[in-house]
Length: 250
Image 1: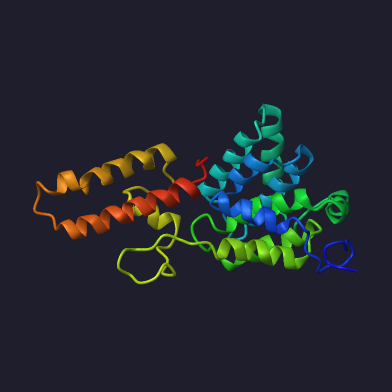
Image 2: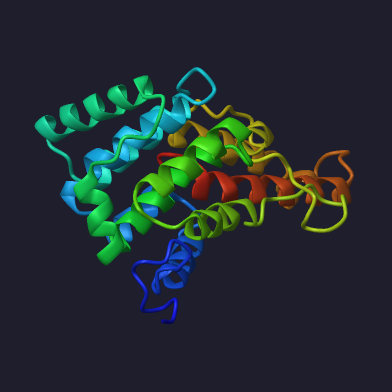
């Protein structure tokens, strides 16, 4: 039996995995943006938030970026007060879990209709790469959680590899595009902010930095035009990453 039609083989890749990975890439590897485009059934959202709590606590503490990401997901779900409380409670429960908790019925549905589990897993993997490649502990927990949904380990590997292999911005003059700038934290630093800042605060900082190195301004100063141009390029690349990767980005 071919992998395309097999639902019993633990190594069989779901046939729509490649299409969803392309959609994820077109969203800038932003999990909330992916779910905004593709949706996630209401019955799968509680499981997502419980697994998010489990993954986010891998290093011992939940970060401000984790909270903002959860908020962006709830906004995209148009969650009312009651659903918000339920999702936050699931996230809190997940922080206490030592193993991923996924209902049996969810795993059975995944084996027959894997699409929702795939989208959930791609949104979950976002937690491992919010600030560039994240900790081994988070990645390990995420891998375990994806498998717990009923997806094969090969699908988990493909999803995590897609995040890991995406292009990060680079510093001008430092060689090829394979040289990382270190992700969101560095990008925020370049524009004069920090990862905990709101997107609007970072936008204002970006505009201020951009104006400092604009050619029209530079020509009336003693600043080296070439250095100013390189700096402006770095600022533009940093803002591009922030606008794709910040939890509030849409």
